[in-house]
Image 1: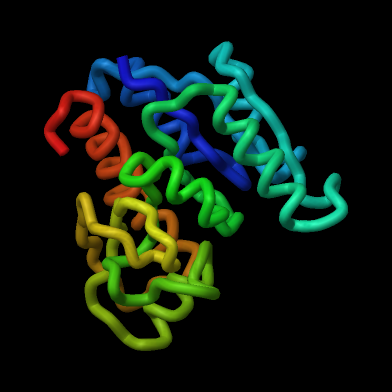
Image 2: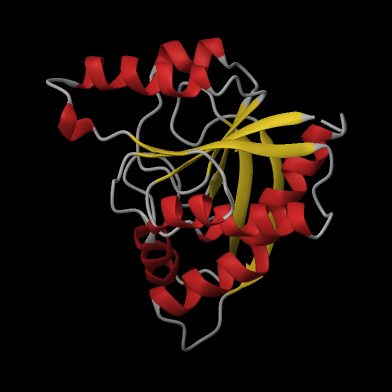
Length: 197
């Protein structure tokens, strides 16, 4: 059984997609053992608690500096003894020591077709604003392994989503979540849990 730790910063829609996929049998041989958020008010924590999943808030604001927060964050992950760490809308830079410790065991979902609209500064609505400003006809989402760069790790899965003429960043964001993110993130976890990656 693959032990999964999910890290989130906000509402937790991708977390919900993972929970739903486990409940529906679309993800097999995996269980979420802990949900961690850097935001004490994240609705994702409520989603986790509602399913009886261990949910922990660990905020950088509670630490004197980033190094102390990083140590506490890594300890919080280690305590869960995960086989896989899933970054599902987690707006925290993962410390290099954690990337090394969990090499090829941390995955991230990014709301574009990497290498487009990714890297430092591209997150949330900013990704979709950039895609619309550029005038692309197709966008999508990518699941990738996390390395020490920003959105530079090996790609696991991608799914394309059509951009429509009257899209706003919010409308496009919702379509990318529904048609791509919520599909390929659970799929990637299932593939890892069952030895297909």
